[in-house]
Image 1 (cartoon, helix red, strand yellow):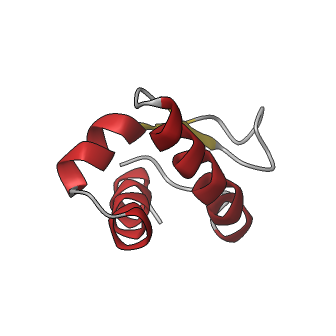
Image 2 (image 1 turned 120 degrees about the horizontal axis):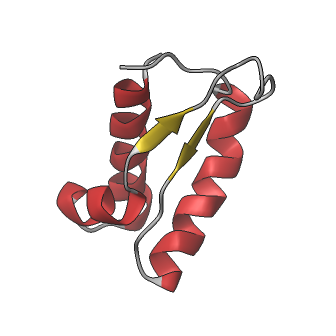
Length: 76
C-alpha cells in the first residue's frame, strides 16, 4: 500500500463512518507522511492533522485501528 492509497482509504472510511464530504476530511487529515523504516520499524507513517477537535478525535480513533492493519506503507 502506498501513502496515497492509505490517504484515500482513510478519507473513504471517515466519510462512511462519520459523514461529511471527502474534501472536509481531506483538509482535516492532511497528508500522510512516510518515515524511514530504519528509524520507524513498527509504523513508518503519520498524518498532519489540522481539523477541529471533534474531527481530530475521530481521525485518531480510526488511525489506531488502521495502524494495526497497515503499519508499513510505501512512498507515493
